[in-house]
Image (cartoon, rainbow, N blue to C red; front, side, top):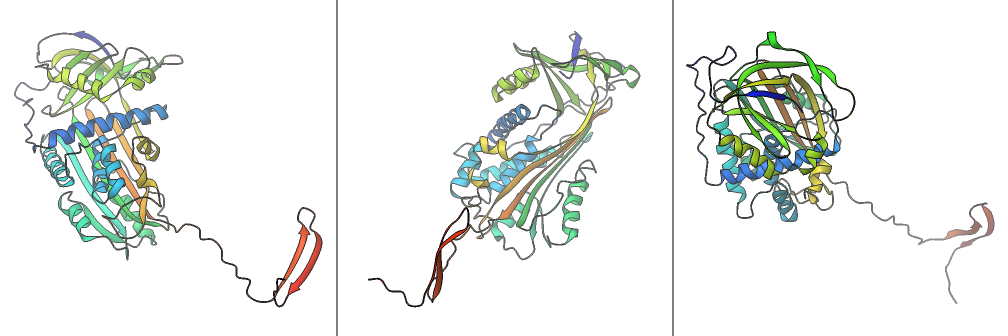
Length: 409
């Protein structure tokens, strides 16, 4: 329930909020590898399911980045083997027929072109691998990370405070300072952090007039209405309606990038329970079937918040199980040491106002050494000894003796 819609009108005329007639509103065509459409579709399905599970658990403002999470987890996939690989690949919903090299190639082709899609939109994607000095990481894994994913690969002294500063500094630098910290500490067992950072800043193709922004009522699913700063304007938009929702698409820049807002007919919680990748495809497919951004009077609240979420539980429920198990995880593509995934966490930031949107996400995967399982104590009675018999609760001593030479007759 982010917005109210009224006055949907066909056609597209130039209003004061609309761009100049000479501005290019034709999206740039992105050439994909043969496998890339499957990768995009599966990452969208993964993202919708992950969002639904997180939203069902957190009854508050939240934002996730499927692109960031999908990239970081695919980086991890390159280091998995056996059932751990199969489970993570299935969690990410990649088809069985796609090899890891095809997946890597698809990601590289897609992300490289996304960065150049619109000069009026700032988009930055960055990957990094930070690992403990002295910890042996397999060269093929590091070569894939630096080659196919352009990752910064660096060994750090995790015991020194500068390591924490370096990792948090990397997150801040690659999100324009919007996510200044992703780690509070580095545990003694930590050996590696796989990271992806995503930053987006785009101006609306049809901007809102700040003079028209005013407090308007917002109606929560429960409780009394309250006033929020609400933007208003006649802007170019695409609108589709379904049995459970109304949805609007608002473009940025030359319209390669857009924001889609879905307003449920009923409660948000009820909608999320039934929200599926199929519904998302119906919404976006309906919007893609509309030729123009029609003049639409839009009322939309401004919003700005940060969010942090450890995703272990949600990813386990989606099938990524063994990777989190210290004694079962197979990360043999990364190292011969017994290691496992301690956490997958995402930090996000979003700011939506009259000019446009600024958003950022950092996905951090923490990999730790497996502590050896407790070994049974060894106690050898192989020399003269004292023995006693007592009642334990009262410590009543019943017998006491010694054995200098055991005999049994």
